Image 1 (cartoon, rainbow, N blue to C red):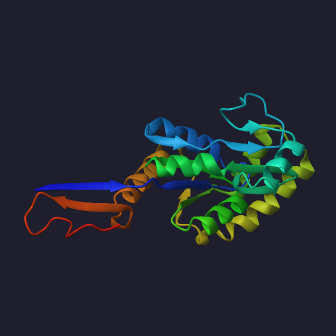
Image 2: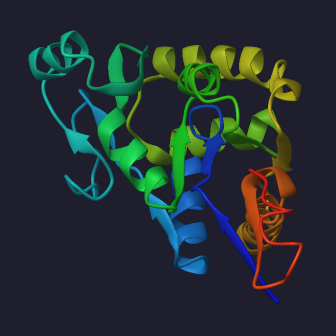
Image 3: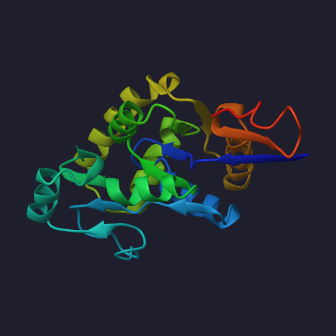
Length: 213
């Protein structure tokens, strides 16, 4: 008797307030789990120091982004702090159809949009250890003035108040521990029965009996 398990890909979404470290965490998770694919987001904002087009984001101007919206090319998109962010629908759907797990990091608006379109997506909210730590991270980036930082902190407080709408909560205070916990989430979700197609073959009277999806 041969027992086979097959599954389609799972979409994992890391969510955090601005400055919450979701991009850093996702990069570390991708290094740990080598068979987890990455969905590169498209954005209309300019690159920050050290960011590489095609690796961190796909950078386009506002006109190009709006044209992509009109052509319905995005899996989700949102305007955040005056900039547009979106995920290419064709890229995500193809990876999932090929049985690949996909990781993406999104703001709260983007995560809501994805969950609405794909209810079986797994969402993880990364909480800052404190609002003081979050403010320090925002200031350390040295990319925003005081007014923008104040706006990001107000938005963060509102987003954190809704964190229980997400599937998992993790405090992002120690990168190694966070990656250990997220790797556990990925492993557990991969083995959930509802994500598996179980087939028993070459057993008289049982062939196909346990097929389920």
